[in-house]
Amino acid sequence: MSFVDAHRERWGVEPICQTLQIAPSTYYAAKVRRPSRRRQLDQQLKPAVSRVHDENLGVYGVRKVWRQLGRESLPVGRDRVARLMRELGLAGVVRGKVKRTTLPGRSPEPAHDLVERNFKAVAPNRLWVADLTYVSAWPGFVYVAFVIDVFSRYVVGWRVSNSLRAELAADALEMALWTRRGSQLEGLVHHSDRGSQYVAVRYTQRLVEAGAVRSVGSRGDSYDNALAESVIGLYKAELIRRRGPWRSLEQVELATAEWVDWWNRRRLHGANGNVPPAELETGYALACDASGVA
Image 1 (cartoon, rainbow, N blue to C red):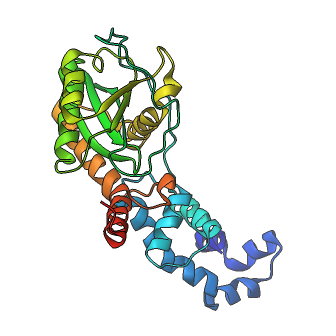
Image 2: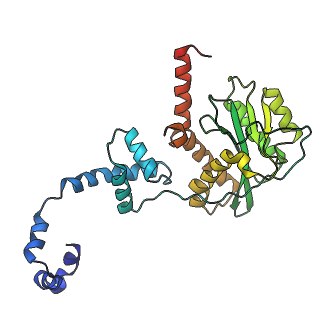
Image 3: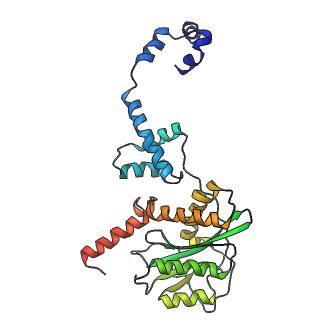
């Protein structure tokens, strides 16, 4: 029909239909036929699919768009979501490789790997992981530090700097401690690689003051901090590579603040049962209150 409509003024309907070997009556019947119920439902669902994709920074793929529509009580099959996203030209981001930015450092005292690649926690503030990444900007590299709570994948601390100085990691840690102010942190395990920023005296002393236990991965083994690197990989894929080029540190900082807020409060996480980190932690707190567990 679209082909005939596009060329009917030049060639006429009957000659086109004769060439295509279809009856002109088929064309005229289709022009007056109402769209099928399936097509009508598709047209109703497309705005919702586009909205969910747009509201989540345009990074959601089929699975997460489908999950979010389900959370909004919009019953739709996953295959239909995939088809509608193809028709709308929408797609999720593809994660790339993450470049390591921490440099090996010497710890003032021995530290062991208390995690051993078992990135699981039964409650908030039991296990944090920390790492750094870089962003290429016009003035030069910008560096970003993250601290993540393993229980919910909540980003509890982050900082942006134009230098890889030790204070960058320490500032992210201070934000994490401020975010969790009033919480019981005694016995918290803080895990990182052996980068000089994380074995610096100031950093280790601050962990001791907070009652946290330091854990470091094996030298040169990225899998020993895999969860932090996974989050950073998503940060680069969902924000940095999509929004560049970056003009300044301030632009990166503002965009990172927006991404962290979305990540913590709205982004669906498969490891969380497809709920945002903040929602998972709120549910955990309510369950503890109901059972009388502190």
